[in-house]
Amino acid sequence: MTDDFRQEGARRVGQVKEVTSLANPIVKDIKALSQKKSRDESRTFLAEGLKLVIDALELGWTIRTLVYAKAGKGKPLVEKVAARTVASGGLVLEVSEKVMSAITRRDNPQMVSAVFEQRWTSLRDVAPSDGQTWIALDRVRDPGNLGTIIRTADAAGASGVILVGDCTDPFSLETVRATMGSMFAVPLIKATPVEFLKWKKGSGARLVATHLAGAVDYRTIDYRSKPVILMMGNEQSGLPDELAEAADALARIPQVGMADSLNLAVATGVMLFEVRRHLLKLDGAK
Ligand code: SAM
Image (cartoon, rainbow, N blue to C red; front, top):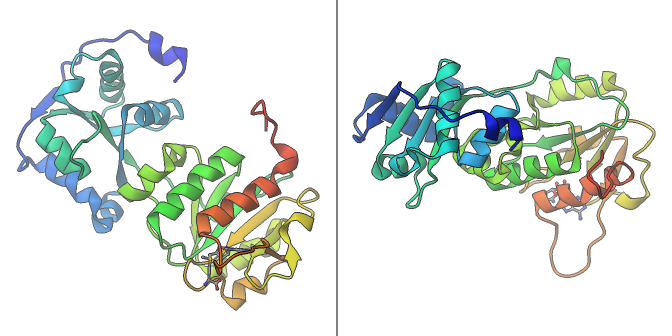
């Protein structure tokens, strides 16, 4: 949180709706965001937690509806977020614990949740440049894996995540939770395999695909001379041939022990920090 945010004096917000009923239509709409269909139709999603909501505001996101539990009333940071929400034309609800639990599907919900508009970046607008790493995920199915990968992408300084084929929804509650706020910082793109392969051809980037049958030790690949697209396979079936064949290198992480493979998010983390090893410094400079 920046000092700017702290110093922006707290002010009482007049336009707050108090809601205690689960039958309230706005509450029903927010609850429905646990369903992909509702998220797709409204192009919105729910994120929980005061810190996360403040981080989102600081990254330039706009809150459509802010929901806070009664316990948050009068807390300076909650009031500041409420004031910003009203100033940008959003709605503010003060709700009972019961309503907050129902919205977030948790017994011990966070004090604050917010509805944001979804943001997608178009693949057409992605032009990898030197020092950039883009992650491409083939049909990632597990929301926790996707959230962890987005969080790790943020931490490693990757430029964005391309969801190739039928992937789990990055805007589900579970994925958003697992990103710990990083989803507000990492551009997300979706593409069919055909669109992705066409884009890759003109991208000027090196496609490094990870594969259990990969012939190359991931520590021996040149990640410096071109931007890198790091491609990871589906949790169950790995990468299909059409994507593996388009790769400039098929990388493998050596393993010992009983496990057939690494968990997808773990493998992505291992790869990302190797791809970006020469760019990451302990002081956080990228
Ligand atoms: N049964 C799948 C298979 O045969 O590929 C296992 C997929 S694994 C759980 C998910 C993805 O993680 C793989 O497609 C690959 O991208 C990556 N992965 C996991 N372990 C790896 C390793 N040792 N080397 C390279 N990639 C690995």
